[in-house]
Length: 92
Image (cartoon, rainbow, N blue to C red; front, side):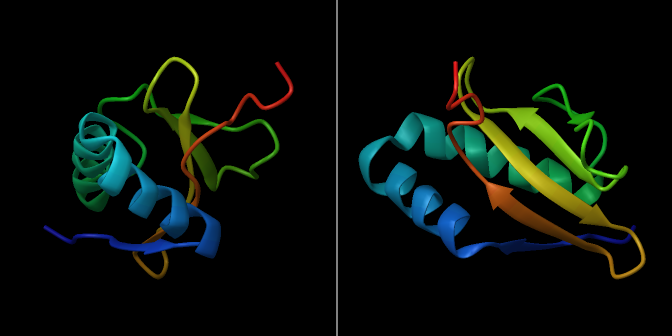
């Protein structure tokens, strides 16, 4: 089985570090989602779905009712780039 490499944007890495320090339950859920994404970035828990503006590369998974894990999945380089970890619905 081929595992995807997980990489983080600067902002996503900061939020993940914040979760680890201040909210262990959310961090545990985030780690579970990341572990799943290493095996299959487009299926699994968190209700993964392609974003309408993502050109079939950008996906979203639920962390909480408010927060989303936004990432790009690149099959040709077997990499997942985590773009954002929280506040997907900033405008609502």
